[in-house]
Length: 267
Image (cartoon, rainbow, N blue to C red; front, side, top):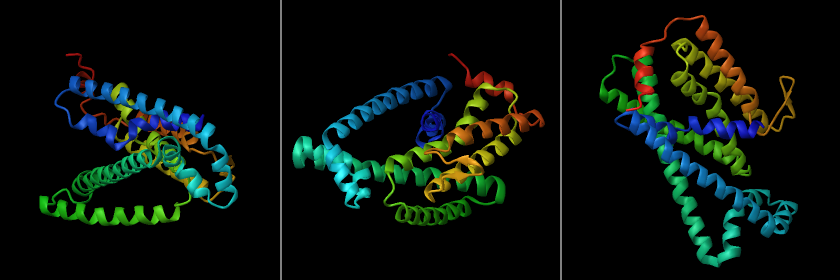
């Protein structure tokens, strides 16, 4: 249940999904863009189901042997290339490897661009240095690239033997606990306030990260709760509760009527 919640709501909070709301000229164009994304995701997840079934039927003995001989990292992360080689020889293996490399590079660069842009604009320019020049913001973004790249490399080395699918699921859980409730409540609840968004996202981030790292450190329980494969079952309800409680006790709603008229425009 926790994994399903993380995957379902986490899609809303992924940067390459959120960017579709910021790169369109109208609310109608945003709706079309999201409809296209939903169909793409549906096809992808359906394909993952069939690929997983094929791996279990065709490669199961090989995977068990790899795990038994201490090669768990290969068994958990190389199953799809192994399946391609089994079904189509070196040609399929090459195609899958090339696709995986292209996906890795595009995802890493896209996330770095999104992260550094957000840090430079939302953190540095809006909070830390509102009076900063464009040159200073660009300089700050460049430094952020090196810092984030270093952190990513260190985490990759530390988690090199972990199941990539599990890591992806955990990132979805973190997104589901922060950006997803903020986006849903912003679009559908007029009572949401700026303070509610800030508090809810911070609490959702903290709880999801705590249970994520508890999983990495192989803890069975944390704060009296069993550590699950995904933090979403704990972090999403807690984050939502903070969003609602803080919003009900504060008043900074912004131009909510104007925003709702634009967001729900049918023209």
